Length: 346
Image 1 (cartoon, rainbow, N blue to C red):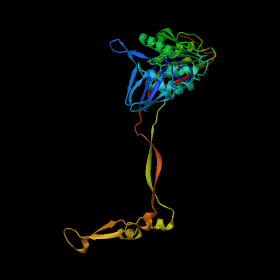
Image 2 (image 1 turned 30 degrees about the horizontal axis):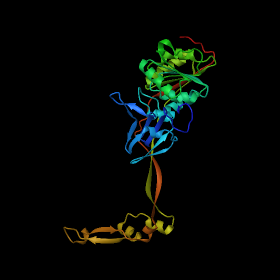
Image 3 (image 1 turned 60 degrees about the vertical axis):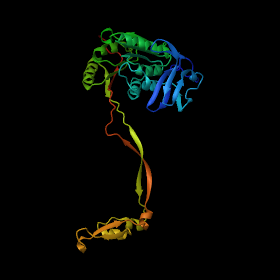
Image 4 (image 1 turned 90 degrees about the vertical axis):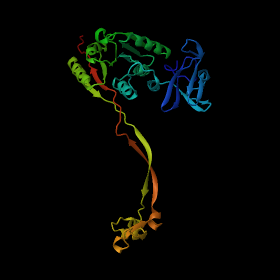
């Protein structure tokens, strides 16, 4: 399967990422037929804005290929945890790439690591963890929802991860994480993580390890930090990953040359007539509607093609502008170190 090992050609049973545009990305399973709502097998066809895509036409194509459709084209990309996070079917709220990257980095997860995850959910973080631990590592993930556990297990099997993951149905706050003294790292995504922290410490190796708790509310974070400190954990740190988008735009601005003559001509003057003479502008005098007296004459400045104006030019600059209101908060990540020899009680 393409998730668990590198490959060049698309085969039956693979999951591919169909890229139509930056806002239209889909995960498709390559199989010849699908069941319709009446339970009858029909040809597997995916509808796009550029026409129909027959899924069987992808078999034998290279990942990254450009597929021509009747009204345009699409690209089929190799499935990665990052692309899977964008396209996966949501069964719960998920973690996104910025938080996932911080979790894997701070927990010091690498090839061969043994990781416990409490709260499988939709499997967004799970796929990233499975790639990080590699074929020599192991992921023990659990969830309190029985149906979600079975769906996640089937998904991991289809993606080729069955040899490096165990999925269990359990309440970790009561029953623990299922392993004792084996894990290098533990990740908790629970409503009450402080209740599961003693079990998490028991799961960590005797040489020590790292624990992370993900919580959306700062009140949960405060109580989690208090429990971590009470249990004797060290290096307690809470981080928040906020995304900031920048829109790249071209802005046209006038450029005034350094020439002293041009600078003098373009120097602003609050006297209308003086300024007009410097800029070599024509002054038209029009009569007021009420009277023709000299005092009520209105002076209008009309631009003319002067030497100074010809010396002025315009240039385009690339500028990055950030949004004033930027949604991005998904939750707080609280990390702590379980030192070697820490007393383990539950």
